[in-house]
Image (cartoon, rainbow, N blue to C red; front, side):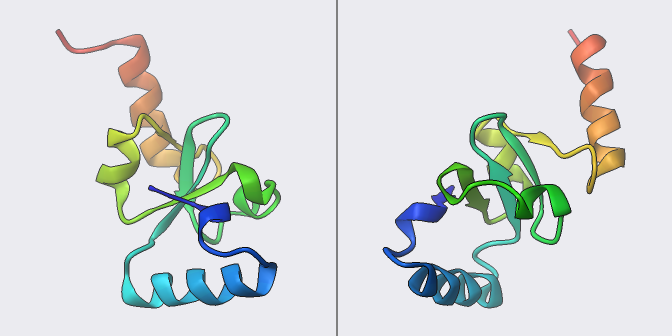
Length: 91
């Protein structure tokens, strides 16, 4: 997990660094630190959050291992599976 504010000091530095990480495949998903939600980098919900609350993940496994849940807006199928698993956990 990478905190957005740890990538660079200025907006320009962060934009350049995150672009490089995305092109290399080191970042494929974004997350909202306060609510522990992850989603696609193109999700409109993720684009509105404050920089200090934004985190990035290499893949879904990393997001899930850090306790994040799928976004209901950009990952509705995965969110529904997660939601059902919360109400009917397997023993």
